[in-house]
Amino acid sequence: MNEPLVLGIETSCDETGVGIVRGHTLLADAVASSVEEHARFGGVVPEVASRAHLEAMVPTIQRACDTAGIALRDVDAIAVTSGPGLAGALLVGVAAAKSLALALDKPLYGVNHLASHVAVDQLEHGALPDRCLAMLVSGGHSSLLLVDDITLGVTPLGATIDDAAGEAFDKVARVLGLPFPGGPHIDRAARDGQITIDFPRGLSNRKDLERHRFDFSFSGLKTAVARWIEAREASGEPVPVADVAASFQEAVCDVLTRKAMDAAISNNIDTIMIGGGVAANSRLRALAQSRAEERGITIRVPRPGLCTDNGAMVAALGSELVARGRTPSALDLPADSSLPV
Ligand code: KG4
Ligand code: ZN
Image 1 (cartoon, rainbow, N blue to C red):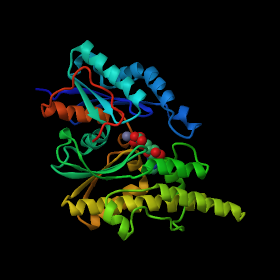
Image 2 (image 1 turned 120 degrees about the vertical axis):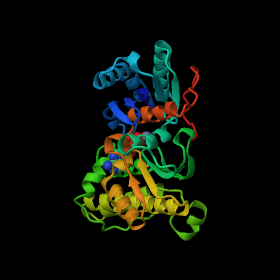
Image 3 (image 1 turned 180 degrees about the horizontal axis):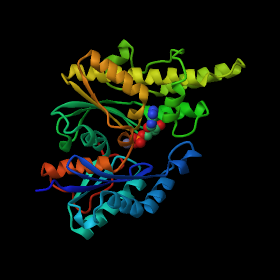
Image 4 (image 1 turned 45 degrees about the vertical axis):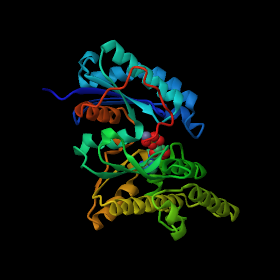
């Protein structure tokens, strides 16, 4: 028998994503982003995101089906992000998925956004090992998670206690005068810069490590960068944007990779999966790779397009739920903005 054909819908933030997979094979990954509509506000505006999802939903489903060369009735199951995320944005995806499931008489699977950021890696690198560590770093979350069976959920080891890593990239980009979302711009600017400024590494001193060994904090770092720039401007000297970008990026990537290695080694884990938008960062990928190699750890990072929010990740987790015979969700599945992992 053919592996099941699963359609996944993602609307937790500003990307309307519709992905179609068969087993671990990606057939389509259509994404419509409202990011440009949010750019002038310097962050995602929930109301704008919800309306954009409504407008993009049907055309994006159509585009995914066309790319995969399938008709909607061929689909065996519908998966959708039911949380966490922006409430109004989630509602659009959940309503669309329920309508499809009802109209096509197919099972519906509500999935957790964080777990699908992990599951997506299977589309690129095949089945996940029985046990691995996932580091999810995006605009909304920065977490270290223990993953045994992705269809049963994940166990949080630590998370940010203030800003998410991507949020810090976006805020620092703003003070540097770079456009939103700032992560890719800082990544690019940093390539021409030197790591000349020693910015603070959050929750890394001995006392903090006792209580927050696997947690992160990026708010102090963001403030330190803003203060450094203010002082520089007050002195009348130009701000060395590329050097500030490289030094800030190093502070984030140093802490992330150090804690990820510590979490993996102390839990006897030899594979670290990195996901979420910040996993697209070139310095994070390089530093994780070199630190992991020194310790005999394998790093798995999906290609950048699969790290940021998309529908393929939802379909990937849905496909796993179908393959393992998990019970589908009821048709009154709620959208839960603070769904725990
Ligand atoms: O996973 P994602 O698309 O959406 C959320 O769930 O948040 O992540 C978006 C975040 C933004 O903060 C963006 O600035 C960051 O990922 N990002 C990056 C890079 N590409 C995207 N951060 C650092 N370096 C990058 N190359
Ligand atoms: Zn995400």
